[in-house]
Length: 332
Image (cartoon, rainbow, N blue to C red; front, top):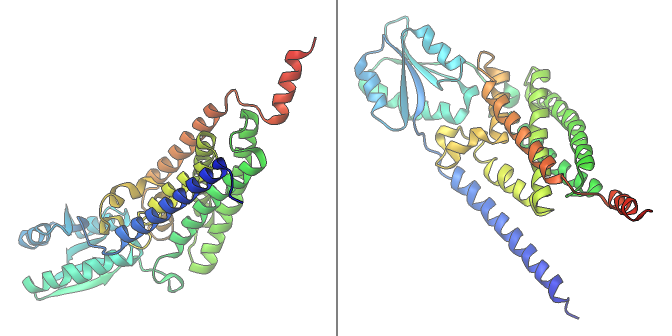
């Protein structure tokens, strides 16, 4: 016996929705990660380096020269995450190319494979030096990325399960309860994920990384709550499109943003996955780098999601509240 038209229509829509999300998933991951290529990768070059060498680097679209006054200033640019590497004059008078694996092994490879041979073709004496090395427990620098992905999953799954408990389009009172539940989940998974990252990948500063984790879980969860308040359970699919389909490949985890094509290169740092991945890397390996952008990005997502969810819940009643309001109206 065939289902009725309404059921058949809903089934068809479900199949189309899942097909769309799956195809976008394939297209986004393959499009972003299939052929990483350096694009304007910043490298700090001290003033003592001959101008001809700096011009040679700047002439290629793969790299972007940041001119600084001294070798110490070039090293500070790496410490502050303003450059992925540095070109300075070493103690022997020759050129020295400095790379930082912790900023992303793929970026280091781009400098070593694309820039070092180019320099050696013009200058015979080019030495290599490494700063900000990765620990042996996380030789590929991916533990922080997977931690951030786990936080994102906790956020949208937590919002979905709490939506089953309190309703995906509940009253303001129940929306506040959902957000309270998300705060508790954020604390558990945020600091728990930071502790696991420290244990597995030797990534220190559990307290600060845990705070980033808490904000990341809350950002994904509260925005998913708002999307569900607007679109019902379909809001979960929209959240997956934003945080997973678009956010994961553009996060800078496997490849830094400067090695990705557009639009992933531009949007990655402003999605919670990218903000969290970058913040973990900075906290663990670049203590002089600023965390201001990560806090602003995560805070903005949380604020926008909370305001939207509360506005959309205005005037709505849960089943019990609706019966109470109706009784009050008809009572003599």
